[in-house]
Amino acid sequence: MGWRFWNSCLNVTAQMNEESGRRRHFYRATKRRRIFGIAFIALLLAALLALRPAYHWLKTKRADSLAAKAERFVQEENFLEAANTYRAALQLDPLGYNPLQGAARLATRLNHDEALGLWDQVVRLPQATSEDREERAAVLLQAGKFPAAALAIDELLKQNPDTNALVLASRYSERTGNSAKALEYARIAMKRAPQDEIAQARLAEVLAASLKADERAEAREILWAVAAKNGADRKSAIESLARAPDLSRDEQTKILDQLHTLDPFTVTDALLAADLRLKMQPENTALIIDEIIARWGTKAKLEIAQWLIAHQQFDSVLTLVGPGERRPQLLLARLDALAAEQRWGEIETTLSRKDLSFDSVVVEAFRARLAAARPLSLNAEVHWNKAITLAGNDSSKLRWLGAFAEQCGADEIALRTFQRLERSPADTSLALAGQQRLATKMHDISAARTTAEKTLALHAADPNAQNRVAYYNLLLEKDVSANATKAKELVAKYPDRLEFRVTAALALLRQHDPGSALAQFQGPPIEWAKTPPSWRAVYAAALIANDEDARANELLKSILLDRLSPEEAALIQRK
Image 1 (tube, one colour):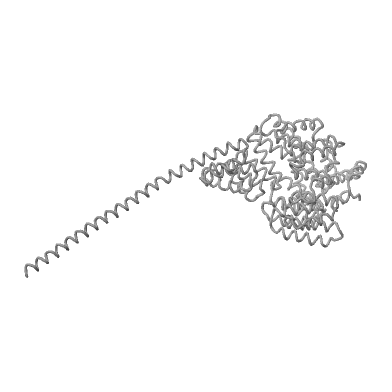
Image 2: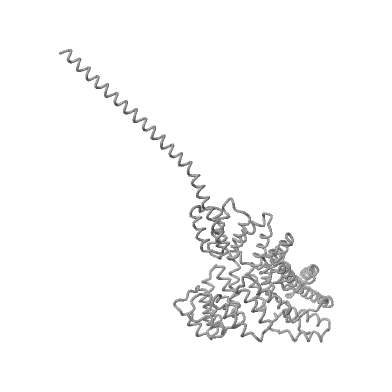
């Protein structure tokens, strides 16, 4: 019995030891497998992490390759394939510099809305250059995004600006109504790069818009030089010359010939050539207009309609743009022509169309114009007020509404609209210029003086603004001594500026010095028929004060009293 018991115990012990051994072996094997598994996963992750940069590098290289291919399509003017290829490149590398920059340039060239968004992404990249920032600023300016454009251009000007940045600053200043700054930046650009055709063209553009004959002559001289070089800016130089107001007959003929050598010959060139022909051959007006409509009326209907309106060819507009037209800009042109022809019933029918896609501001403005043409002036006021309310603080709508109301002769409405537009920092100069025009037209010298002072506060160094404030103060006989001093300073600095000499003459008349007042008009002959009535009134007053009655009477025949303010009319009233 005993030995069996012990034998059984030994067997149990052996089995237990065997089982324990198996368990230890299993646990060791499991542990090794776990370690091997973790190691394998770690190695796999490491391999993946190592491969990821390589994969990204391959995607970037492929995206850059596609961008280069797209650029070749652009050079071939295969813009559809270029756009599709850039799109494929951006799918591979959404933040790739080359695909983004190329796509932004293509969108800019094609004038597509997405250009600005693409440039915004480009300039955020570390590879972005000053040229990229300049191109973005140009797109902002073209889109009328003046606050953003101002910030972008200011940044460019802080960083030793090149010619392009200065030209952009000049264009921005011009677009926002600061002609003095526009000229200043253009001259700086020209001074830094005298042979740069872009700088030359910009300076010529600014000078060409000047009221001074000598500055317009300087503009033509620059443009002829650019046109003669046969460079990249030859086309724009010839087009600018075609717009110049002081061309001789020989110059007109020469430019007309050069316009027809331009390649491509665009609708803009065709219209400039037609304008020259109308000046040179007014007896052929009907033929010239028929030729323009026949060649361009289908391809560039909007441009032709707007050109016809500018030339008061309203019947031709109504023939070109039919009553079933649905495109808003063309329909606007038709409405303008109908209004000019006083076809109010047709305007009312058009405004009642259910498929009309005009902005509500435009609809209300035209309803106001319609009501004003009928014995419904109260209704006109209601529609104008509604249009202003609907425009809200939208600067683009306010700009359009102010210009439209001014064009319609609704001066009070236009003034209110420009006063609201003044709240937009980017549009302040433009709004003040509008208020200045209207106050002058309404012969409200006090309002004109207030507006001039606001403009001077914005542009303290602008001699034009300084002169306007001095002129209005002298008319109102306020601070005569101080304003007379300022007027004389401006004449000493700008002796060729006739408007400054007019203000100085007024100052001298207020100081009871008629001889010196008349002396302001000595020098080369002045074409008084081309000057504003207010300038002629000051000159006539100087003649009267010097007992030059015969010359004064001859000049007074050309002045309509209703074109003068009460203060200006008082200058030529004999005592």
